[in-house]
Length: 328
Image 1 (tube, one colour):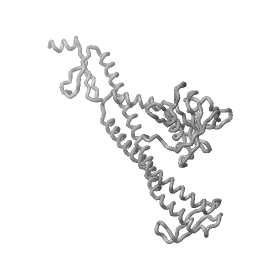
Image 2 (tube, helix red, strand yellow; image 1 turned 90 degrees about the vertical axis):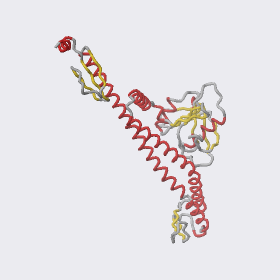
Image 3 (tube, rainbow, N blue to C red; image 1 turned 45 degrees about the horizontal axis):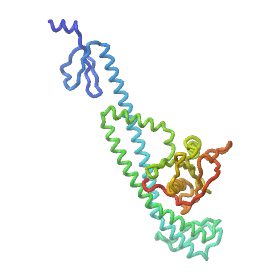
């Protein structure tokens, strides 16, 4: 009787928790042995603690779902890219046909006249009775042959790069799938919340619209992805003393080599940045590409220019082979 009177005069309230399961009670519940229990002398404190835990639980689940959704999106995106590169690899491995077509055009050059659109031969590299080789009517037979030889060379040279891209994508997909499994199984509140916060900050980072490269562990090269991001990069994120690059005679991405105002950039870094600029242009498959560069303060965006269009002053021109840094 005394214990009952004591409980009434000095009430104790309980908050039971097991994972995301919360139970409020006005009395001790002996059957909830697998739950942790907190005692409160004030019912308002009990309610506040419950609301805080519930809010944290909702925040945790929202952050976890955001992270899972983003990882699944990245996995799907990478798998689509992987499939595309595998198709490109198949095409590059069939490049021998283009070499053979070039040879057949030269062998039958006396049968071809300018303006002809198709050459039919009985010597088919694929084993069929008749080979039909498309010709560009505006080109001479020799120019058509050269076109096929050029296709062969470009596809053949691209095979090693495509294989590396495929390998990198496969590793990336495996890493993302492992991370997804880890997040789905995780109950680490602090880690999930932190990762979600970083993810949201990254999404809101406008500079993610650019490709970014690090040269020599020191120099940053930023590259636009389209006409709009080209404008954004040049007009907002390039300092006056940064070096600005663009391929000559072809459309391509604006490229910025970021630098301190007084530093002298090594010649090899300038050539590497120019090679990146050439790689992200319509001249990517050429052997030797002219790239113009100058300090950004000599790049002008005049009124009436369409997106991505600028003029240069005091530029220098160097010739480079389009390529990415070897560790990309």
